[in-house]
Image 1 (cartoon, rainbow, N blue to C red):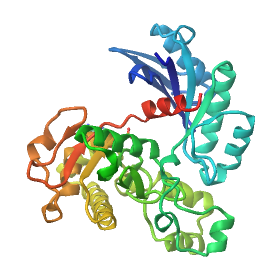
Image 2 (cartoon, helix red, strand yellow):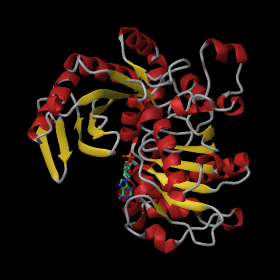
Image 3 (cartoon, rainbow, N blue to C red):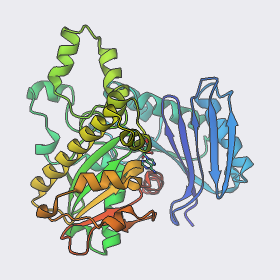
Length: 395
Ligand code: AMP
């Protein structure tokens, strides 16, 4: 047995954790601390059928990790007895040079801190999480696994913005892509499901969660992805805008008098489904549409329109696709989104089986019609398992 890996995903006010065995894929326990620093902070941990919860009193990330350890112990998962071989940290942005899973040392912390301007909302809390965890678990290797890794070798035609070349080069401006761990994992799972070598498949992967991204993958290598320099480009997301004309930002700055921070907060936190309808949860969006809510309808229509546009673009880039796979919270659970994303695409070789699409089945499954030249799959993503396995490649 290759031991146990603790995977941490540290956000500005949340800490997600999971303890798993990378060789078997078994998850021993997972949980999340939310609203760190607020009176209403909560921590939950699920182990088997048991869920444990703590409310309040979690002042900072240090306390959040301590609470997680307490909850593990309460659930009978004592880190000391579990053969912990590594702590894997999800790091959103690795910039130009960092992409391979990397053992954390002081020099890496410095580099990650320097990358903060590229991912101001994501990298600083990740660094904080790494520092806290290193203090708490000094005797195991800590490994940074980058969300950008899978897209490091995007073809230049896809990675390059058509802006001033010198400026772009000086400031390392390129399309980096994110959710790479998920796109890679899901595309590998799709090949396994189809019992076909990944080298012979063209794939479109649609990672639709609160964050959302699409990728085109030919022969196991990404040829395009929807996120760019930051995780803001591309699809409509829970609270992020996805694609907007850069002219909008200049206009807001020059004419509406908004500052950089306000524009950034607007694009990241008050846009997307939330900006258009005040709601990010698709279950509620559907209910509101059914009761005649026009804002919810418009948000949904914009979301689907953008998604279809990317599917069409990726079909054109690759010439054809063998498989389209839906994953993440919306992609795995929302049959209506899947149906509306792919409706009337039979002339392009994509046909859903309505019954299979609407089946409440979980796990990896095919939802395309038998006669559909393109297979459509739903595959649950498992970024934590992919991170844990990535750790084993370097320790
Ligand atoms: P993620 O970021 O992958 O955890 O996805 C979270 C999002 O998935 C939520 O905000 C919901 O919009 C969506 N979601 C989760 N469960 C369902 C469901 N049963 N039906 C529709 N959407 C869901």
